[in-house]
Image 1 (cartoon, one colour):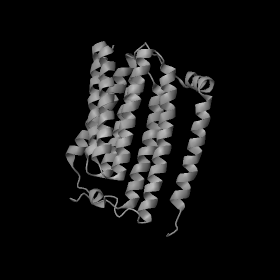
Image 2 (tube, each protein chain N blue to C red):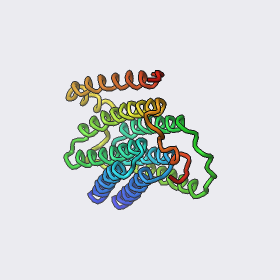
Image 3 (spheres, rainbow over the protein chains, first blue to last red):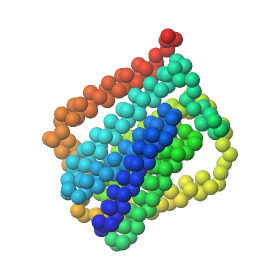
Image 4 (spheres, rainbow over the protein chains, first blue to last red):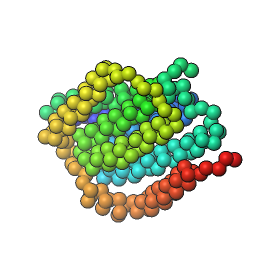
Length: 105
Length: 160
């Protein structure tokens, strides 16, 4: 191996990161933006693993990815609870209900 | 063997990009969350093939198991989605994903890369405790604050 294989992972990580950023810009739905943020997070940890691979520092990448996964879970819980609260308090008129139901806007 | 591993990486990379695109651009929120779960599973497979089995299990148990399910349940609570007709194309895609995931794991068992080696729980915990105790304290504080804040926001019921 696997210089080709690890380069494929790097390219995939960069593309997934860019897809997440594009979704963050493209979507106007708050939950969709949160999902796009999570997609870019997945791409970012792939890039971190690639960097650890070329630096021969697997412990560094392992601890960094472990901490970032736990932080991502905290971020999801906070953002979703705020979203639910805003939706219940009618601060948001709709959480793209049309999109949830599958109808056209 | 090396060529086979490259093919595995190529398949996993294509799956990563496909699931990322489906998560971002799919119209349904529920399906987007499900595709995010598949993206997390594919990421876990990449971790496993690269020699990070502990990270793969953490990714599956914590990220996919709790985070994405939390998104799905929260979105489902907000509005009941319409009943979607069973589409056999979706089931075929799901079956292909599961088979590819299993094949990637089985193939990678015998041909793990040796330059990084396995990162087990003992070496990882030792590294975190010796080199990153400050970050662990910060992480614990952030997680405690997130837990308290999310619970207090979720149970808040005042009509202001």
